[in-house]
Length: 356
Image (cartoon, rainbow, N blue to C red):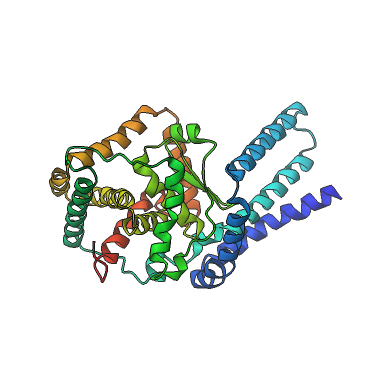
């Protein structure tokens, strides 16, 4: 009976892959019936069911899965890979279940409409628009930094505990849901990752567990990065699977947040991406904009850079290559470079009725 179940589940794997590939060609259908249909109910249920736990249930689940995988490999080696039909079917059956859960609980959001279409924002801009917008961002960031510390040479230190920042982030989503009801966030389920130390050496700020809808945040990163990182992972939770779109959610919610520290974190987060994009086509102009920044802002950027430099390891590039491959496999053909799409969304969002 068990062998038969494994056989059926293994057969379902290629069928699932084919169905997902077909569904991916109809983003409007996924947008309507999955992302704005059944997914909000799935995600809210998981967040309310697990959000009250002070620890990440998803991290524990990952630990169990990894231990199970190690045990499975050990048994295969111990038995010298005897009965290949049995263990191959067993492996494919397990993979079939994981594949189904990943796509049913969250992963189909990779194939929804692009964000600029669903929010009706243009995604094209000129170099002149980019430079002008980046200079406005720099000016506003300077104002926020000076208002917070009263001295343009001092970096901004966030006076909140990490747990408070994770709770405060939801206010940014509440602040914009009147304009975009589809961005409503209910049932806070943002946790400090149990794997914060390995995450740090892998070079990651956080991640979403697609099976439990818990947002895990690296608890060791500088507080300057916590508002944007937390808001980014929350963007994933409400159904924006692509990294560039979650980054835009982070910018939108932090820049519109009622708390000035969150605003500062949001404006400097957006500014970094825009300066990077200016640098691609006009390095001199990018250097001029950097020279405009208060020394305190540059110290905050340096704080983050020094943090990552202090935790570099020789395997980090391999982790980034692996993650880039994961992004490409999930409808993000540019991989990690697709993060830059956020600039197009920012320029056009603030070009219209919205002002910095």
